[in-house]
Length: 223
Length: 250
Ligand SMILES: Nc1ncnc2c1ncn2[C@@H]1O[C@H](COP(=O)(O)OP(=O)(O)OP(=O)(O)O)[C@@H](O)[C@H]1O
Ligand SMILES: [Mg+2]
Image (cartoon, rainbow over all chains, first blue to last red; front, side, top):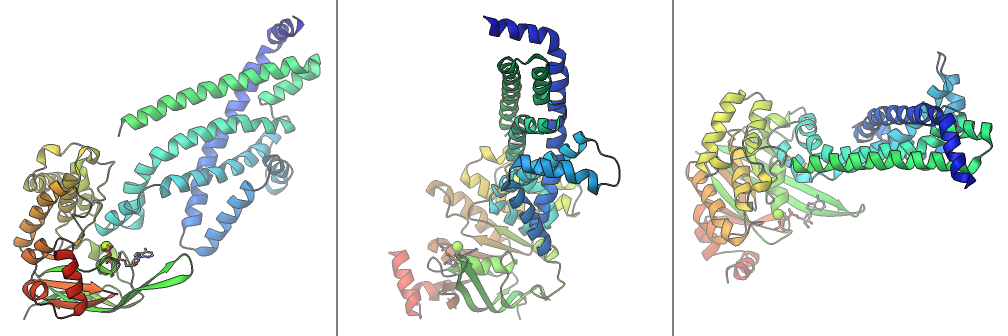
């Protein structure tokens, strides 16, 4: 069949574009997004639980707006707005990454919130009754327990982000979906290129979720 | 004259339920607990016993009224409640032991973190406390491996490690299987005998009668009756006390 021999031919010629450049950028973009998103998510979580009420409202509003609007729209806004706002030169890759980080941060702040809220209120009460202050209670009692809920959820967020970064290809930032656009532009073999990219995405997320499961089992075994 | 360790003056506390309605739970509670005194609080469910107890170390903040602990008005402004809480141990119905820490670490965490002891001193003290309640061989286990009775004994010595001046117990045996109630009550009895000031919310009438210097009967957000165990149990004056006792004793 032509279809499969076409795929073999495309891969023989363009494997670097797909597997090195595409996969590489996708993983890089995802890693940056999740790591920075985790930091932003923690800040947003702290903001919404802070004692200063206006900060609570601001953080809650940001999270709700981001979760309630399409990500592609947010990426467009970041793409146009970030270079205008920042005083130094930002690449397109940079601008789009900012958009991804803000989006992911909002979801991650929800991960923190539900992970921390899942810890029984009695734990806080016991710690406070011993004389620990709020920060000591959070750092020594709540977070060490919540982290067991948070880490697996962050892993899932990473897998989600791997797939979502495909939207960034709209701006040709070099991710796996951008590889598809490039190779299709050269070969005009749309279905073949889509199949290749689809298989690579699937293999990527499949491997990542297997790794995550193994990691989760180890977390549980430590209890 | 006996010295007051805790004094409450006209405490009021309400909760908002379902975002709207307010539930007036404490309706003016004025009470004194003397140093060395053992006070049990009994009464029907919803009467405000837990709320009153939790106000004493400000886990719940009363809207009005005063709490004076060791001569300090802890309900006042600019009071560092964390310092005072170190002197008030609390034991909960559901134990609330720290599942991510070993049995020994459960005990040593607070004294070390709060600068009361070095880790070595705290470890030594923890082993003494654990052997006192028969848990020494469990010191390196995690609490997940303990029975309910063992968890509660751990929770008690965790509080004792801070060397509190008073112990507050909120139904310490209510969540236990019947065969484990005795082992926990024995620990509390021994503690009370050693002179520890204690406030105990309990449904164990026999235990309350045996260990208490005084029993408070709480109902409808007030202390409806207070007196020595013999009077409360055998000659209750308030009709509500009579009714409650007739339900729980027979
Ligand atoms: N955090 C809270 N929010 C809303 N309502 C509360 C809260 N805590 C207690 N209440 C309500 O206040 C009332 C008194 O509760 P409290 O726990 O003090 O009673 P109790 O005498 O300890 O009863 P029990 O014997 O069932 O433990 C109850 O109606 C309870 O539902
Ligand atoms: Mg109660």
